[in-house]
Structures are given as C-alpha cells and as structure tokens.
Amino acid sequence: MQAIRLNRLAYFSAVAETGSFTKAAERLGITKAVVSQQVSRLEEELQTSLLVRTTRRVEPTEAGRLLHARCVMIFGAVEEAIGEIAQINSEPTGTLRIAAPSDYGAATIAPLIAAFTRRYPACNVELRLSDTKVDLIADHFDLSIRVGWLDDSSYQARRIGSFRQLLVASPELLQAETAMVPEDLVSLPFIANASLKEPLVWRFTKNDFDPTTVRLRQSILTNSTPAAMAATLAGGGISVLPDFLAAEHLAANRLVQLVPAWDLPAGGIYAVYPAARFRPPKVIAFVAMLSQHQQSSRSIAPPL
Image (cartoon, rainbow, N blue to C red):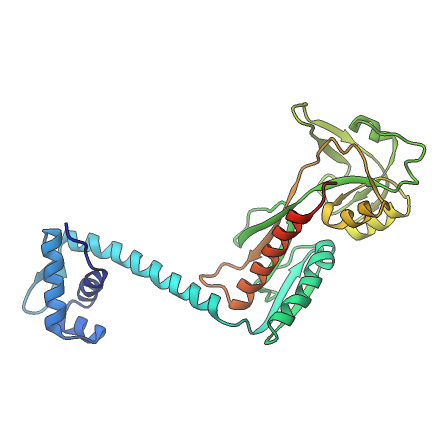
C-alpha cells in the first residue's frame, strides 16, 4: 500500500465531523473539489468506503467511524505535543508559587530560586516552607516539592531525584561509644523526628543479610529536621538525617556516620503539580533546572 498522507486523514475527519464536503472545505480553507478528491484517494488506498454520500448529508460508514475515532486521537496527541513545545519555547514570566519542606527547601530550593530568577528576570518566585502538606489548588500553588514517600492523590507527580537517610552523631558523643551493628544503637540517646510515622523504629539492610529492625531510645523529640540536626551537632544524641543536610557536616568532621555498612531506606524527591493538560513555562523551566541540579549533585557527590 502506498504511504497514506496525513492531510488526507485531516480532510476525511473534517467531512465526518461537519457532514458536508462544502463545510469541510470552508473549515480547511480549501476548495470542495480538493477535499472530495483527497477523500476519494484515501478510500482507494484503504480499499474501503469511508463515507456514504446523500443529497443532504455525508455520513461515515462503520469503517469510517472507526477511522475517525482513531483520527481524533492522533490529531489530539499532535495538538497536545505542539502545545507543550510552544510552552517549553516560551519565556517564563509571572509569579511562580512553590511549596517545599523546610529542610530541603532551605538547603536546595532557596539557592536554586536565586539562580532561576537571575536566568529568567521576567519571573518572580514565592516560596513557602512547611513540613505539612499544602492544598495546591485551594492555596494557589503552581508546584510542590515533596521529599520522602508519596501518598496516593489526585495530583500529578514526577520523580526528579532521591536521597539517602544517614544515621549520624557528633564525634564527641561517640568518644566513649563504639556502635558496630544496628543492635548496639539501642543504648545510645536518639533524637527523633515527630513528622515521621514511626520515628523510633528503623529498618537496616546490609548486602545479602536479612533486614534488621531496631527500636531506638528517644532522648529528644522534634517535628523539625533542621532542629534535629542542630541538636545532633550539639551532642544531644544520634539521629537519622537526609544526606542533603548531613553531607557538608560529615565532610567537615562535625558529624560521623554510624554503622556505614548498613543502609536505611532511601527516599525520593518529587515535583507535584495540580492536574492539568499543559504546564506553564515557569513551571517547566524550574522543574528542569531542579532536575538538572539533582543529577549534577549526584554525579559529583563524594562517597560517604
């Protein structure tokens, strides 16, 4: 079969939708003769009748209805792709409203916003830092950055990175202690994060060993990850911190990692949006910048 030209599908769809070669020609801005000729060629190529012509109206046949349904899907996908490309190529403008957790927001999002506004001066940003989830629609947010594990929701989400959870302590706290395996940790004071579902229960894995679950002894409880880090740096106990907060202090020997051969569950970093067909250029541009930052930071990060 010869290659079927896509414009013939467009001519056929216009006739099927308007019920008239004349109206289809008016919609397409061409002559009725061209529409009729192209549809006839399409029927010849497919070797089937697509339209039933009467003196008053043109109706699709069963084969015509099937083809038209597929044409609607094809042209809809093309229209959506063109719309997305147009938005990507548009310059970000206006106010971008972002919600993010306090720890990741202060450590990563805030510095990235500074770079974003320098690159796109026609765009300004409002950032709300909170460890509680926001209603993106009711609170008029364009985007939420969430760290950890996503719950099911009506929002759309894109995973843009990941982070490790690290068990750490100040060097002074461990001068008289040597914790070699997870079970040894229960004797140490633990700084717990109340924002977690089970802040005292932790599951460790090591290569092919069976997972080990331990319940740690709470000495301090806080609902803020930066506060838990501050208390850990001050020698208040051991704590579990995300690598994007702990890495700098580990490199400077202000913190040390406990049982480094054992891993805690890793978490994800997500861009969460209200459900929508198209994304504004400001959202597309910022998520692309954040994704690139996550990839580059992972590629240059030294092993802990």
